[in-house]
Length: 163
Image (cartoon, rainbow, N blue to C red; front, side, top):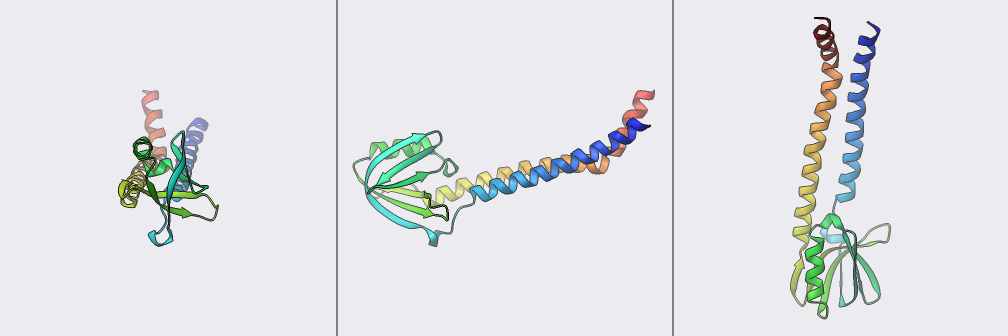
């Protein structure tokens, strides 16, 4: 009988813990991936002095200013190759400089040829958020099963074992 009451509480505790962790991790991810308003972006132009890829992000220098193209914007290898093939052209960047002072790139065009547009970045980020929400809903449902039906699962399991 003691094992049954412990199991009932464990299902509830684990279910609540799963829901809390899922909501916290999802909220953190969504706030990280959330994009700025178009009116807050600034336009920079010049010849690209340096381009480096480290992991899934690009570091670009124009007019001795450093900018970062984040992995959350998508298509990082394609963007890198597009910039490399047009490196000597005049680049125009749409950049968001947030409170941290880190300049994030949201659109790149070189000599009026669009490498990545703001709309494609927004579309990619919205798709990421959609998938995170779907996965979060699945995990919250699993947590809800533990909370609301954990008692029945334990009782059913104990009846099966007794037979």
